[in-house]
Image 1 (cartoon, rainbow, N blue to C red):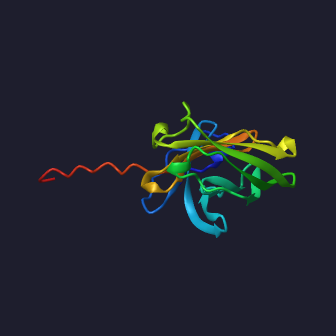
Image 2: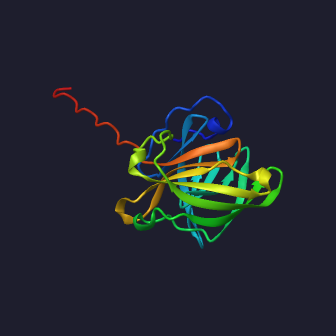
Image 3: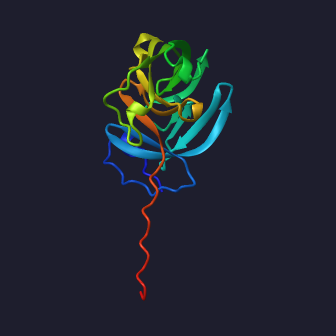
Length: 206
């Protein structure tokens, strides 16, 4: 049913688009220019909120907390555990221009790198000119950038970008660009498949 995420992590040719099942939720993941789709397996709950656990057909796992990466399994580099201090909620429409700061601590494999600390600054930015968005216009979202200073400094990451929808009055991340390491960056888009084309009725007498 699903295209395997292994094609982006391993550099193989792109898999064919899956046949979408309307009973499932999907995540469109792009790395190295190749899109694949993951399916929502289940939702975990932690004090900061609900964690969406997404699966590829080959068993790779991505965990997102309100749009932010909080864990992966089966990638070349994995975030085994992520902890936050003073994690802010996404700004509402009234305070969308206010910068915020928080701390993140992450454990990475391979190499048993535990307790990497990131001091993160969240600030609004203009809609970017280039993204991997495929299901919505960048101008319809509010955009934010997260820049981090890491300890140790060798574990620093490129900036992350988030596209947030305020449709319905509740901020919701529908697109993001995040890096697990300097050489493993991906975009994540909440994906609603197009409805199937209607099947033409058979002609009378056939």
